[in-house]
Length: 130
Image (cartoon, rainbow, N blue to C red; front, side, top):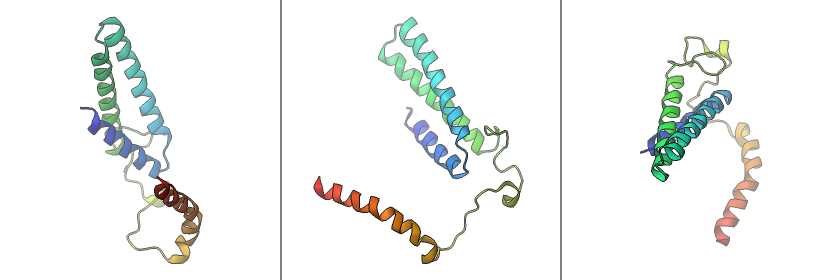
């Protein structure tokens, strides 16, 4: 039951990192963990529900985090810096990254290819060795 919420949290975390916002996901996930801890104490320790209580606590906390992420991404909730995503400002005013729908030139991506080639080679060697 928590799998869709985990997927939303992971994807939203990546989207917000793409906006160069790491504070908002940290705050949302910290709050989610506090909720999980409090629900664990109530459901597992006080109500003696055992693993079922822990599962319920985790599922509820994940869905709360997912809804918070969706609220921030939809512009209904402010991000950690107080701004709402898509609040009508132009990208040049905010410094946001705007997607470009064209292939980059080789000279622009060459440094990235060179830098990542060592990791790529290591991954190939590990796969062959296994």
